[in-house]
Image (cartoon, rainbow, N blue to C red; front, side, top):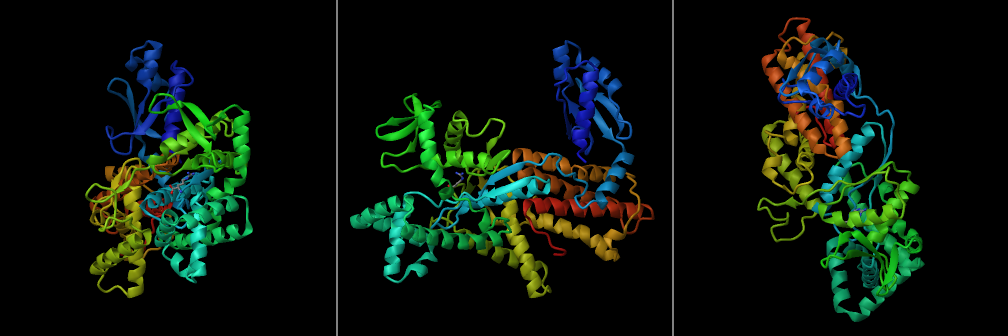
Length: 576
Ligand code: ARG
């Protein structure tokens, strides 16, 4: 159950009954100003202003109309017109009892499931996945998992860069390699392959000529070029799939919806934009001039959608792609996990999309952007030699470091168990470090921080989870077997219970804003509250019925941590 939503409803009814307008939207939130776990309603002041009434007077009237019987034990006016709501321990106990037996820890499935397309990962063909794609992959996957958990119909769209003029060069180079009998070999090293191809293109005029010819042929559907192209895509995506699997990311080959998919739509789009008077010929190219964007001279910015030579652009593809997601995939909402440097590109594409009426305003196109991954020196994250960090190498290092860490802590653990643990911790650390930061800012990639057992890190969270499980293990109790009622007997218990019951409202924020760090902060809080509870409220040595009631709280803690970490794509283990 979403307690916050329930309280918001009640407060807004009371506000309306007290004379406020029907569209008032009071904000009820968990407030640090009130005791932990309780709520504060905001919005009375704004309504009072509209009504020309002293805020406290309106607040009094709201209280007269606010019926929170069975939910709150106390409601009071605070400050200039806030309403503080103190949850009733009996209500909390009853909610915990419901949540603990529910597989979803009491989180209700969404009432009206939507079809939500999530554009994420999107590596490029014949290039190794790099750190830019890491952030998109990890954060996008957390969004996909969270939305699916709530019951939405999620379509994962891996917008692979599998189209463009560079394919002429790549095909020409693959051909050259095959003629020299080194084709398959050379492609194992994608970066090297791309670099060599580019070098030939820049230095060998005959090669460049051939490459340009292949672009045209490929776009014309030439069988030979298509086959060479497919080879390039296949080899790249086979390598990337290994990375996805290692990362515990849910993307599969079936989710690939590369740029090429939209290729057949492009001529029609250009023609349509022309006929609608949005696109015009300019110096041989086809351009859409947008008033919304100004160039350096302060004039409307021209967005090229077809080049002089007939080629289409990244923007043309994104226009088609948005149209496709609405028309063909029937998206109700589309989320794009792309770094912030592409913001202007997306805004231009979507401005055209809206003007052309390809996607109605009622269907949000959202850029969930993120900053860069920086090294400890504050500069873009690079290898010591200054090169791009390959994802595969990064994950190897994570594993290596985690293995060292966990084997020091568990010298007697059998090797295969140690491997599983090192994998969960190492990969978890890399992912969690990213997920736990507000995605919009750059973040510093720091091995020592992310692998620390203290603070908001994967190892800490994973360890916290095992600690809860160990309560049951120590006592030899099967957690399913406890059916005892819950009694909230003190403040530690009520703080933990109230926070545990906020899983649903936390999920609601994560899916609204696409901000998994909110989930991380929540889980970190839960772990901290459990620690405090565990320290001050003996569980196994307590008398009945307190003992079983506390076991129920521990059980719900385990459940909430597990579900939360699952929605983030962070693996848990039973012991560490
Ligand atoms: N492949 C692009 C890159 O590596 C990202 C694509 C993002 N998605 C999109 N619809 N433009 O930068």
